Image 1 (spheres, rainbow, N blue to C red):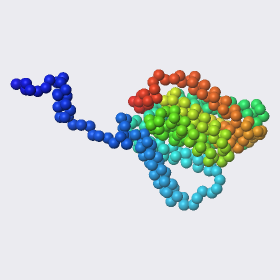
Image 2 (image 1 turned 180 degrees about the horizontal axis):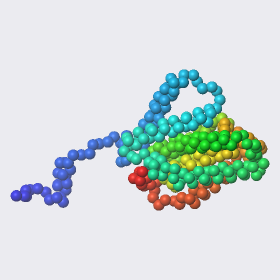
Image 3 (image 1 turned 90 degrees about the horizontal axis):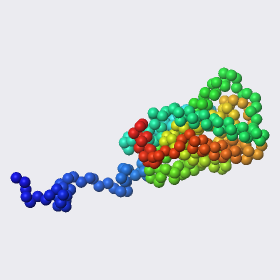
Image 4 (image 1 turned 180 degrees about the vertical axis):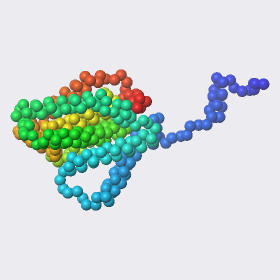
Length: 327
């Protein structure tokens, strides 16, 4: 028989008895957790500690293998290639660890495998080379650039051209993921997409001040470049366009037009090019990215991105979820 004294399912008494009978969810400390899980600040701290720990370990091992310090001077392109490859593997590998902790697809951090070296990457390569070509052409039109004589044999052109292309693609991978990959995704969860992008772009510019010959004007240009890359991330949902743009612009500066790149002139450049004229025109020791014309070409790049990638209907958060599901 039914228990006539039992409360009806719709009554408040029934709800209170049911909640008392069911197990309660464990209480989570609000200092560490919010409704999305572990708070962004703690995730960033874990990631930074992982990067620092692995970096220190790799440095210790490298010094054991090569106990004698490298001679003074700039590293060779070959040494830079190895360094950039390990640097990218370090920051990306730690992000893979975080993806397991956070139970996310690593593709949400900006490098979905499904888009690898696809349309966005190729478009970035094309428009990066177009930008640096226009920039150098504007400087040359005002008498600030001369191509000079060839510095390489035909075989050397192929060998060095490919080496620099691989090198600067790795530079694109490392710098874009380091400043606009895991850090951008997680910091945006805490303070918002654009505040995170602005903060990391300022740090991106500050990091370039350590380059030989770099100055405050060039660093300011790098901050704007960082904001451009953040804009491409916002419009495309991933880093592939930014990596292609980054790689081809640096390749154009260093190899094709043989000018300083962030204050550095590397071995294996195509010609004996010269920059001559005032620093506002040529960029001085910084190179063309310190020229006033660089701000013009960057403005054109923003218009190109607006044209190529119309604003997506979903918000940045929903876009990240969609990318996670698609990755």
